[in-house]
Length: 296
Ligand code: GRG
Image: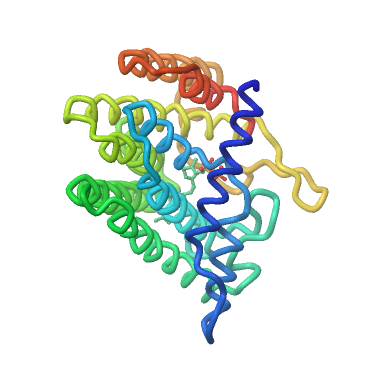
């Protein structure tokens, strides 16, 4: 099986895990479960749960205890996208080629669907205690990482500085701060949780955090590049995803060619660091390389 086929098979397995932990529509509040499903099962690359599962396996993890955390990280990622698309933030009508959650369910339900996914993420992660009650210490630590990396010192903190900097030309230092928190923190959480649940020692967890930090930065710079180089078709009309935003990015700061070279450099550094953890097969290094070449 080649890399693409293996990746696709893993995405399907991740989506089965997501479906298993997604609440079924029921009761007077069924509409919110439907909105949660609409946003969570809308495709997406599933990079975060995949990085989590691969890191878990790399460091010797073998049980299903990782699965509620895989679902939890994707729920948090999805809630952040649902809220980011709201009129008060990016005001996007489309994501992944289909209508955003608030367009389909209304702004009120969009806000509540994001809130519901965030709460459901922690409810789901805590189900790991039922799967491996004897690992409660590792599971508690993993929940601590999940909450802090998603919070004000992580993703939300990065989003706050990003939103507050709108319309300003910002320094490279501030841009790095935003990227490290807004994009990097959830990728760091994904890999660190995989390591912690597998029983990695503090040195290994630090190494994993450093690798994930580089992946996060390269991933976000690649996102900046795609914003100017790719077009997305919405209802048959090609649109540039950066059409409405004039903001500082690595492309506006460094130029397109230097931004591309930086993605290559930082990703290769991540792969080099990963090699020190002696991956058993090619898949994880190939996954990191594929993030450089991604076109969406
Ligand atoms: C609203 C609290 C709050 C946070 C929003 C994630 C985010 C912070 C904003 C979305 C906009 C953006 C470009 C964020 C950077 C992270 C990023 C590249 C998200 C897209 O992740 P992918 O490419 O998405 O993994 P898919 O669709 O594949 O799941």
